[in-house]
Length: 479
Image (tube, rainbow, N blue to C red):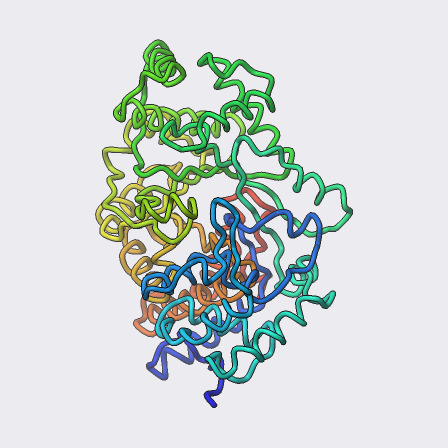
């Protein structure tokens, strides 16, 4: 029977001298609180504090990192109990778990394997590796644990040392769960993030119903350009009242525009009338990124731009199971030309923070680092999604640091739907960053005290500043 072991030096440098430096740095930040400023966990978990049902519903069904790998090997999503649009999931959850366990070897060498092993060992106390033989033991022990008070969402929030957690909601969301969290008296800090894509992207399948809900929530005439903009301002104020410090925008490109008021109004009239074409849809998204940046100058919300994904690439799967089912594929992405219209307006605003993410690693050194290394408003988000991995994190640091430095980046965010993986993901980032800093110390490019300050900044300090959270404690005081 294979043993499950989390080696204390995992992900640290292989060279003994550099590893010793990395160990010392990691020891200073390993237990710092987790700040998770962007993610997709369900606020209902924290509003109701209800127990999860079983291992399958917790760890397979909601996690596209897990089931996309299994799907790529021919496993049926219905057999894994991944929700369908029509809600039909007839498969027994234990049978789904057995199927997952018998194919666990597929995750060897992947970030998902690291995250899951961390969950199994550190959260649930397993000492043997998951496989077909141990599947039932895993399922029974996890499911039994989930019924205990110590495994309720709020208890785990405290156990994981989470200080701040942001979820993501659409512009048409009434924010009832966040209101329930605030009214419950629970001190955990769970806030929302403003994601208006469904009322901006006219090609989104939910655009019309989302726009109707947007109008109902704001009382504005969203069929008029000025009324539509006023509705965004009202909703942004609602989100700020619910604790939001940031907005998020996930269009396929980073294209922005700077239309005159008259041009923007004529474009919006075509959108509302349904006489738009694909070029209009792209131009409207581009103009609205600029409008969102202008509103961030007004209200101080940090703006996040997540472009470069061809979403729902598998049309058959999209029709049966809907969005976010592991079929999103990275694309080449332009930033230099795409962002220029917006930067012409707000690029030199020192009080604005626009965080750029990418799925196109070729842009790190060529475009993103030089842009963030110049414009006061720009910061670089961490390696994201497909690159949220040890090698992806190393490539990010290696390709951006020389031009953008460390202080034009924003630390780490996990961007996950999988609540139980949050500590594992942050631990991986801390280990990789400490390894990178240790190499710079070993090469006499940093002193040891500078590396210690940077280890804190990359873990806690920069993220607090970027997302306008409580002031960061100076590194030497934190130590």
